[in-house]
Image (cartoon, rainbow, N blue to C red; front, side, top):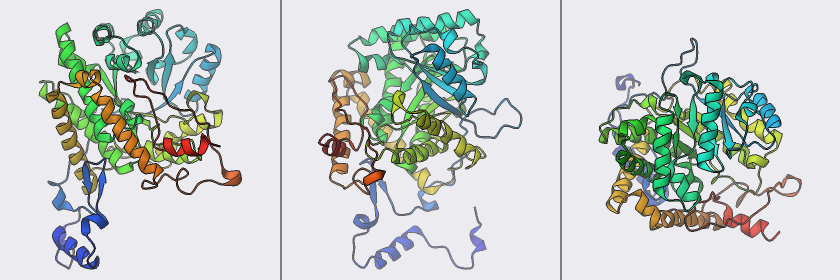
Length: 468
């Protein structure tokens, strides 16, 4: 920071700047004109100074130092997803992706696949291998165990995560929570030797992609952690074991700076939550998977989604994500070109934007530090309120959790429909003529226990595409 004595004029306080702005506004209200609100909780001022922070915050460390000499200080995995249909063709797709920029996988499995064929010639010791269940959970876990045993994989030869937790079962079926908890306890014991492989992942992204605010996403996601610790302790699983076996998956939306602060806040809040349970963990030991948001994308002018992907990926990296999962908008139906573009975003941010040259580039920003502090404060208040009302599981069972998120979702969608919230290509600057390139609209039908991915532009799409 520049020494104040460097300048030949006296420094001005924040109050003096605000007083000057008010004079320049010539009677207009300062707050109405220049302040805004983030997620209906956090007030955003037009500028921030050193008076807003208690000195400069220290640089965060998002991961341990690389074991490979000469590696850049900032490292993340560029993850691509594959959903097998033909195992031989999928294996070829995996090898092609790994040879062309990807260094991590999310493999969708229903439990019937031949993993030896699917991952043939894949050296798991050099990549991040993540598994996402799409079928019967017990069969899925059995498949992974059989694959590990068939290859006699040593603990150091597998790193990554299983993108599953007992809470997922509640949103997908009517199974009892205890059933999933028993499976979680078994997974913790089964994978206890694999220190870089996490057998459970808290899916905060489910809330964000369903329309929750960033504060709701962190509140309910960390609420899941508290619930799991409390119930697993009854099965002789300690809080230390829980934290050591958890990864975290968050979706990064289009509020760029807020999302950077959100991901950093998540890491800090996990450390503080662990401390409350008497568990000491280092910030760099926490594994956070950041994926691009489904909520922020639109079926209208689908090419605009490519721009959204890029700045969301950038926020995920700056926020400290350990794995970056750029999701093609069309999912498993994405074209070869769209998959390639999604895969290349990470490479561009690394090789052309040099985001790997500094561990924590956002450290020292008055705005981001203040934003992060306010997000943390709101999440802690939310968690206290959640626990006072009986905890995460009760909020799920009485559907107050769902009601809260559906209210946030509908409020945001109505703002887009009313043009009070601008979405380029959807309600503003629509593509015309030959440039028009929309995706097909399908209504989202949600059961009472579900939280399905939606889009902020859903009501606008309904008006335009459903009547086209």
